[in-house]
Image 1: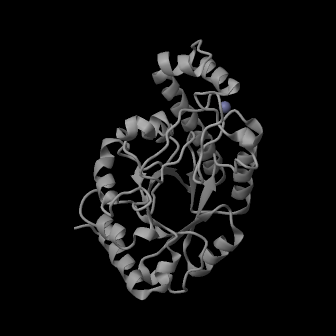
Image 2 (image 1 turned 120 degrees about the vertical axis):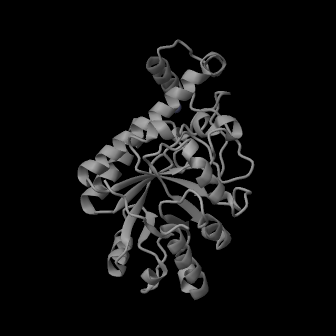
Image 3 (image 1 turned 90 degrees about the vertical axis):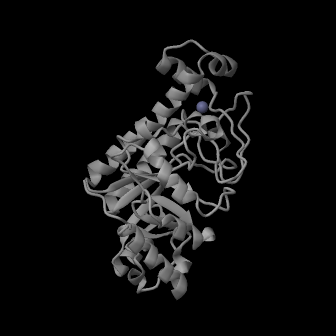
Length: 313
Ligand SMILES: [Zn+2]
């Protein structure tokens, strides 16, 4: 399958009619949103859905909060993602939402979001916790890994590698399942995944150890990997995207695409730095980016950057 270079904002805010003049050819928006599909078709833009997987309102659904190594529900903040993955009813609901959206609409791409174990990463100083140690998840681990370890202490003390491999395998299997649902319904639909933006070695291997996102294991399911390069929020400079891209051949399988999502809060320096020589982003998403196209100067920066990414050097 050939994957086009797609450029545009993330969000459901209205775009000006002439937005294509500025290099925009796609929009990413939350869920199977009828109005957003209509806006895209009116403007001749590719419609791409951000699909929420493992994220829930823990105030409303305390039963989904993963259990930490101390046997209590994990600490969490506003941006937390990940749930206890033994909650079958909730998992069935996610799948039903995906099936029904795919029956009704024909998105150009579906980007799976929050496809991780629990935590949050849009912060300079992450609060990293191992999870989930509820009885069902522990039993599932023991059965899958073929070990007998009934407590978090024993799992983390004697089977840390098996535990990490179990979690990464679990996320990768969900990715394959959702990807198969998407491709069965729409064979040409791009399957993307939003990713924790850390390199494999950062924060003591938290990309796999905590979030369970293993690029190699996910590669069977995912066409395009999209790390969240939100510089200010993560305490990083605008060159972060460029640096990340140049490091990416070291851990992203060569036959998969990488497409950054940048943050409008860091604009324009983040995009200008990204659109420089080196490994290129396969298109760009701009989080909360629609308002940029109401300002002609900002919109022209976008257009020039798209041109630079399409024809590097
Ligand atoms: Zn659990």
